[in-house]
Image: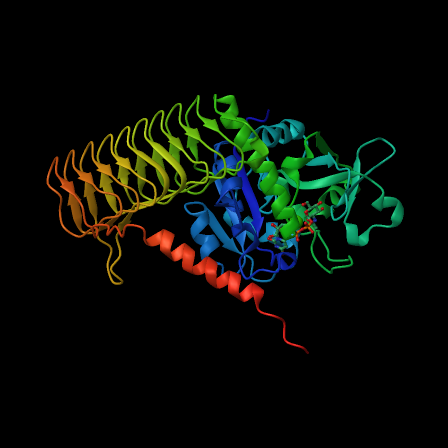
Length: 455
Ligand code: UD1
Ligand code: CA
């Protein structure tokens, strides 16, 4: 591979019209992270001297996402060639290799970028090609009699014969920085879109007797571009597969991986089991041997070793589940710490709560944490038993070892090892049900016997 210094230019100024969005195209997210940041991360791993991103005017979010790398603004979107020309202001005097990448092709891997640099070797320019089953929308690579790259023809400028070519331009170029400026000045806009295409470079070089090298990669998924929402969904699928495989290679078991959705920062330790249809939102960490059961939704949660969650559980941000705790079906937990070994088995809501170890929080019990204006905290000590259908009206403190009787609405603190019971005593009326039944049955018999009125 070239030992020359490396600079990277990323083109991201396009309108992204086909996305039909008010947001810059490269700010659309994949696994919760903007496309541009996926690409920047791959670029950073190559340790380039600089990364220059070409953005459009008034794209403050994009400018922020690109930091600390250099942003240059392409005032008039006159094509990919025009965009690279804009970037040259930040590359004055740079004579090394310049990788030119498209911001809307974010899943290209560092290994592929390195392969492109290897292909460039001593050539003036190398481009990355790929064979696509469906090449529609891509520039086609036209090879000469000698098998060398002669030209790139855009879909909109291609005749039917050229459209049948499946060898396409992925958009990734590696150019000799000392010659790039000279070529860029020769690009014209004689095409169907009246734009300056960067794809004119191979033809310009060929005319001057030069040769453009081509590296052909075999995995089309990583070089698929994103022009539409359908493309975005396809990229998401590719990325999710990659993230899941990474985790499985690290020892995580997913019973039906295709149904598990991961965030870019999901951390799952070895020997965790993830059942089907689980959604990981931002900021989830699972320690080893955690079991997440089907149809659970987790975000902002740290689940400690050997705990289990679900099926059908929801963990909301700022939640910590203690070692070996059991969170069952239809349980929602928000901004709470659940102690080790505690059990919240079914149909419960726990919000703004600090719960100690080995607590049993029964079916239908909830923390009443909101008074219509403010949130309040519930503190539950260790070894507490909260019965079914209990309302713990916060702020309230249930001390160690206390029992709260089923059906109670608790508005006052409960001391350690005490029983708190807050419900009306039952009234027993002997024989009432039998009498009631008799009256009702007699009334039914009577109404059935009544003759129908003549109509
Ligand atoms: C481009 C290539 C095509 C290739 C395909 C791969 C050209 C002319 N065509 O087509 O050969 O097969 O990518 O996905 O290069 N951009 C700017 N400024 C502009 C125009 C575009 O920065 O004035 C940026 C866009 O933000 C985008 C990238 O360049 O990130 C590609 O532009 P796009 O319009 O999507 O090109 P394609 O039609 O996909
Ligand atoms: Ca594109």
